[in-house]
Length: 138
Image 1 (cartoon, rainbow, N blue to C red):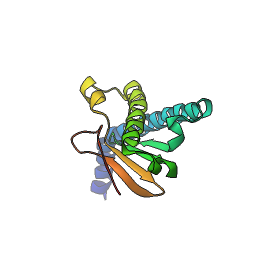
Image 2 (tube, helix red, strand yellow):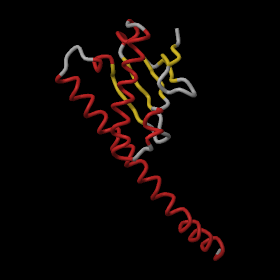
Image 3 (tube, rainbow, N blue to C red):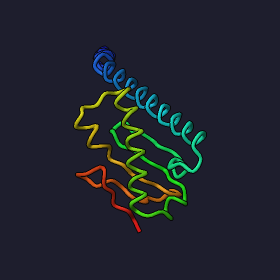
């Protein structure tokens, strides 16, 4: 019985810093998502007919990926315009990630791996070696 209590105490001391890092990471992710959402909301409010009208939600994930949720009208525009809009979303998101988390210049210029969803279905994704180019599902 003493061994299991001692093991539990040792386990806690080993995992405590790990839990703190996870909590800090979650907090940073939440701050990034809040800042992105606030900026998206402000742009939608003050700029009607703006590219932001195609975006429902932007979700930054802990693993440095983006999930972008778009409106039905997004599917009706050309792939060239879709790519331009998603690149703008990446840029908006990268500004906040860089500000709150820090990124190297190379990572900032590379962009973020991105998934694009519409009505719960995967509409497209960034290419594996070039996050500024996209593969669109037909």
